[in-house]
Length: 366
Ligand SMILES: [Fe+2]
Image 1 (cartoon, helix red, strand yellow):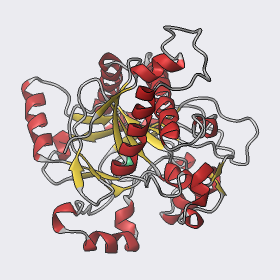
Image 2 (cartoon, protein in one colour):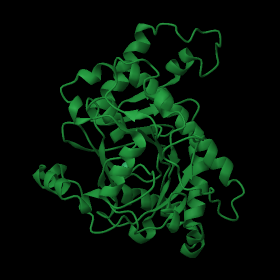
Image 3 (tube, rainbow, N blue to C red):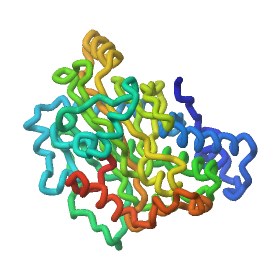
């Protein structure tokens, strides 16, 4: 089974985002084709926890520009990268070296029990320690001036010798948020909610561009786990295409699936906050990143072509605003499962989740 690709262009054109026809009435009824497209988006998110989209505003060249810069950064010696480490700020900005992030499946006994109960062929790889991947944290978008959840007063970190850093990070970050907003509107419509049901809660959310870098030269052996089995605690996560495959996701029916992202496409994954807002109609997608035989093939090709052996993911975690309330929306409030999702502010929810594994910050993964 392969995930279908949803082209966002017809929806963007309708909503005026592609500015072909600004005279379009934003309240205009969706035509049956677009309605079906929205239903398809919500159905795929519900059944797979992942969605492949093509957004005409985010080109393969944009993705390449971002990956090229991040490869160049991760190629630099560890001592250089550690200059951007802010451990005292709980890694909320700057670089997180490999060996710091701990996958939840390593510390959560309840999760470990569930994993052992899974059929062998669908069981995730077992990490033996912290994830051997680096990560860079860059905040994207405005933050509220008045909030119960003040972030640490930390300046963005820009590595020396990268004059294009800020522009490249911001460009990719804003484009990823724009794509997520379109999908969030379509999904809301497909779930039978007002089209701004999700996007209105995302305004001034603590969105985070958080690309990872995994050194395949050092760790490129089949079976090595770069990101152990986990879910994301944010609303939706989006990635551009990585130059090296390795992402596995678990469908709602428990089946494990290797994700292939076509060139020029983006991958969106459901996080815990959308699960909360839909009372579990859409659940947070479980996933892992592991070196597979396809990764090994891509490594061999990259070596022949003299390309970087760092696997970069261009991940952005989109969040619900910290002061907004997470609770089942609209008709989902009447779902029999709604009591499993009591009202809680998004900021408090994130703090609660992070305390489980003794981490602080607002990153999207556990
Ligand atoms: Fe993740």
